[in-house]
Length: 261
Image (cartoon, rainbow, N blue to C red; front, side):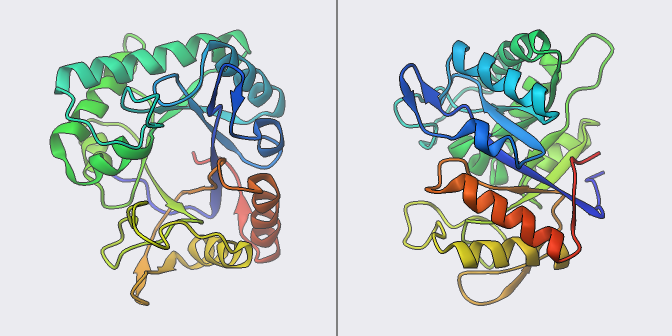
């Protein structure tokens, strides 16, 4: 069963999105705000040194570590949809989780959940085969006797349905800085207005989604979003300051912030 809404909202951010000398996210600043860290596992961004450092910082701050798995698309930042055979995709998802787990354990923590990134995230909203492959990868990476990690995804997605059917905890999430369609899906990044850049608008949407479970779609309609976690993109300009504003606004609105159960 998909996890119902809770009194507290989790704040997650995509972190570790760099490679070698190139960096994109302000990991240290964001880890002082969020409660869950989606750590890039090397397929769309991230490398061993970055993964290790982010896990250490997250563990120091008591932030939960999540594996942000993706298609093998370093050049395209994981935002290009790919037709990967189910067995291969499952193995690649398990591989990414396992790699991050090494660094999480070395930091005194563990990988606590899985969230697909970019094109894989959007593909698993409506593609049953790719959704099932991701879930199979999560199960493959599980310790003997364990059922598998919780999975974050879009409310109503086939990914969350597949996770729930497999006995995994399915955690619906919302996006403060992304435009929504009337169907409750994300407006593709290739379309104008897909990403919101007005900080005031992002903050207001975040509070409304967390407090009321509603977001205004691109056509002006009200769409229900019963989310347990709220994503604050780490690659947005001024992401750390925006995250602080969102967290402060949630507190002012009486919305508790805390990691999902």
